[in-house]
Each structure stands twice: as structure tokens, then as C-alpha cells.
Length: 481
Image (cartoon, rainbow, N blue to C red; front, side, top):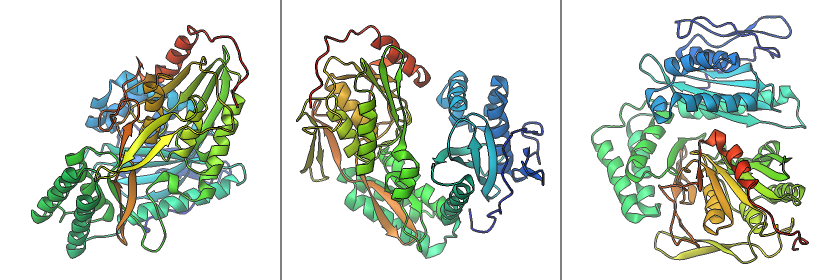
């Protein structure tokens, strides 16, 4: 991944008429007519580009057999082993319903094994950024496929496209910077030192440091040619010892302030994302539904949460959809919890690596939206992706007896972390605190939260709605202030 190979704009496409060569055929690419008729959009003729073209073609085909063929031919075997193929197809259906038809607009960056492209989804506002990386060894199966959104009602599509492309080019270029020799050694030693001195569990921190230093002494990092490769290797070695998913090392730009935490992005970016509050509606049977994909501290985020709660204040049940919520900070979550739990309810306590109490988290006295009646049933939808602060939110409702968790066991990421500078080229995320539930005196680190109603994530909403209809709400009273 490098600043070289950043491709110029190739125009904007609106309709999608994908013509793909046979799946996996060398040299195949996806061609899409541009709206101005001055050419065709083509994914790069690289291993990553061909995989991207195959993905878009299968995604837009509305054909389960074609998607199964894509999974079989392009996804890593370890990925396929995680879940039955039918569950993967169900996930595809949910994504297809969410995104609609994908129209690729621009390749932001292209290398043989990596490609990032910006696309329009017919069912979503703003733009979608897809990052795809394939294995170095043939048959070049997909090792990484992620999606993020860039949305705004204030900017034109051209401006969104420009910003998404520039951001991705910078991010990917940072990982492509060459590394060698003493710089690799200095970076590995610095990472080991930080883990040893800062990780919340001193014994595990020392074990991670020792593992990294042992590999360094054996020349295990010498084959890293790019910053991204070194970052990934250091992350993998630390995670192999601790199994802590809040630990990662990432390459950054020494000339530009950066962060690996989504919640730390510039305010204007978070506003364009509506602070990750995705949907609020009243479902049939007067059931309130709120979907938010991250938890933020910002006052603006709390204001959005307050308005969302106010819009469902007269509902007979509440559903919080956290299936895509990866965590974040705490205050918006505490505000929402305060609307359904009594004033002064202790939620959790946080301790440092020496075992000292750092803070106690409790519900607030007067949530702006008021408090829901105790008779209103509460449900929390979860998936294997539900992590960190989102898990803390779900755990508090479950263990207090106030809410039922519906879906899949969560990620098990309980340790709050901090972002630290390794050197001008690398950042590291390090868990520095331990959080203990006030209800169980335990942590969900490494084990996740077990649902009260265990169903595949795609069935979680229907299962919650079915259960909610069997639980009767008591006589109405005036909501508490």
C-alpha cells in the first residue's frame, strides 16, 4: 500500500450492469457503464481487483448460488470454517437489504494484493468504502474485507467521494511505507516495553513482551517489508498470548495527527455519520426500535440519543439493536441506561493494573428524555461483532434483570484501552483498565455475554418481537421526570 498507484477518478456510475468474466479467471474484471458514456469502470487487473469485481458481481446478482460460489472460490478457508455457509448467505441477505445495489464509483488505491474502492448503495445515503486484501500465496483468497460509510446531507456526492478517496489513500499509504533493519528492531522493542509496563494484567503484559522479544531475537520480523506487515505481525504475537482483542498495532503518518479509534475521529466526520445512530422507529405492536453502531461521549451524540428516546417514549417495549455496535466510549450509553434503570443504579467499577479503584459508573439522576416505566420490556440484540462498551451496555441491562439479550454470544472485549505512540510511525492500542460488573462482580473479558434467547443474529429481531408480544405491560402511569 503506497501513495504511488493511487488512481485518478474514473467518473461516476449510477446504474449497475456488471459483466464479469468466469469466476476466478485470470485477468477478469468488472465493467460498469458510466453515466456520461465516456468509458467504463474497471476494477484493476490484479489479484485483489479481480476478487473485488467478483464480490460486487455476486453481491448484486441476488442469486444465492452465485454468492456461494464466490464464498467457495474467494474467501479464506478459516473464514468459511467459522460458520455454516447458510449463515453466511443469511448475512448476505441482510447486507443486501441494507445496502441495496452497489455501484462502484472510484478505486481509491490499488496494489496487487490490496484494493480500496468507493461505492454507492441504492438503499443508503452517502457512500460506502470497501477495503479488500487477499493472501500473498495463490489462489489469493480474501484475507480482509471491511466496509465503512461516509454520509452527509450537507455535502455533494462529488465532495464525499473526494474526501473518502483522500482519507483512504493516506491510511493505506501509511501501511505501505518500507521498514527494515534497526527500525524494525526498535519498533518491536518499543511495543514490547509498552505492553510490559502498561497492560492491565502485569503478568500477561510481561508474557506478551517476552514473546515479541523472543521472535525478534530469532529474526522473526526480518521479512516484514512494509509498515503494515510489521504492525500485523506484532499485533498477532501479542494477541496470541493475551487473546485480548483490544490490542493492536497500526502504522500511521508521522506528518499528520491520526487515530486508530473510530470515536476519536474529527467531529465533522462523526456528524456526517450521525454519531453512528442508524435507525429509530416504532414497529408494529407499538414496539420502539433503536439501532446505534457505536457509543460516544460527545454532547452532540447524547443529544441525538435523547431525541431518539423521546421519539419512542410511549412504546410498550424497547429494542436496542447492537448487532453492529463495536463499542466506543460510555456517556451516551449511560444516558440511555439511565432512561430504563432507576436513579443511582451502580453499573460497573473500573480498576487499574495495580487493582486500585479508578471510577464507579452509575445511572444519572434526571435523563433528559425521562425514565421509562419499569413495566416496559427491554431487549438487546447482539452478534459476535458486538464488542467493548456495547457489551457493557448489554451486560448491565441483562444482569440487572431489566433487559433480555437476544442473538449471539458477544465478542468478549471488556478491558478499556488507551491509544499510545510507539514511535512517529506506529500507534498501539493497549488495555489499561479492568471493568467489573456491579451486579456479578465479574468481567465478560474473553467470554462475552451469553444471550437469554440464543438465535442466529439475523433472527434476533424477530425473536425479540415475538417474546415482547407475550409480555404484558402494566397500567400506564405518568413517566417519571
